[in-house]
Length: 389
Image (cartoon, rainbow, N blue to C red; front, side):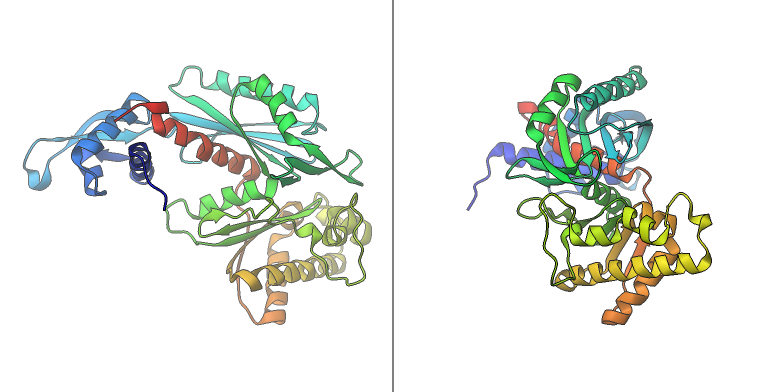
């Protein structure tokens, strides 16, 4: 059995009080005590520490004591912009960046068009410019950027420390060592970095949106359909990555018993449902939906929805998940039609009636990457780097 040291308990208490202020941003110390089992001495020290590092501020207001008796209570207000992180979304030919606060709110964004590969030297230089832009944005504010998260369209293998990505011509996939890449970026931006698959990052953002008041679903499956297909999985309100960080690589799902995978090519399902295939077979372009006839659109939606329904059924039949989010360029182009037809096929195959919604978060991958950077770095801020209570 693991033993807990005093510092472990201190950090846990700080995390609890931090979460309380996240939910209720204006509280007196005694009100914090009433929401925990901690002594008033412990709460006082933690709130004073949070005030010292800028997480809360005594706002000059006060409330009467219980029943109007006793001393007035000083109110402390949570400062959501005290600490910020940057999220980077690298998908296709566009880089999107978000500056996100402790409420997971986007307070600034920027977008850059052009082919910039994650593994190129140009990417590190681009990130340096983005960080400098955001630093300039907050230079007159009491805010601090503490980390950067990157959401990349690639399969991350944490044991081999590689990321599998498409080559420039999008015809093949290749493995790259991400440690080397991240070291180069760190030298440029001087910030801690978190790397995550793009769909996992967007799943974090979508789930955080649903669970912003703390009463969202416990589980969620998100499927993103565009140039490729991928998924993110939330179990018990936590992102589930799997043994090698490969949860959600739906491109390799296969319904053809004769198929033989080529290690340098995309997976079977992706070859059947990617934007490239849809454009070739159905003249489907998400930017030009209006050129399709009603019959062409109906046939395309029917084709897409069958494969989505099969992928969903074969995933959730093992996990008993009821909440599904669909996103990506293909879905965004025709959300109502694809969702409704997918529901019909799921019901046809299983008799189940699932809750399926379209993704709502703008720049969800960037926002989710920033949230993951917070989760990594705020634990260090809250711990005070060795400060004792």
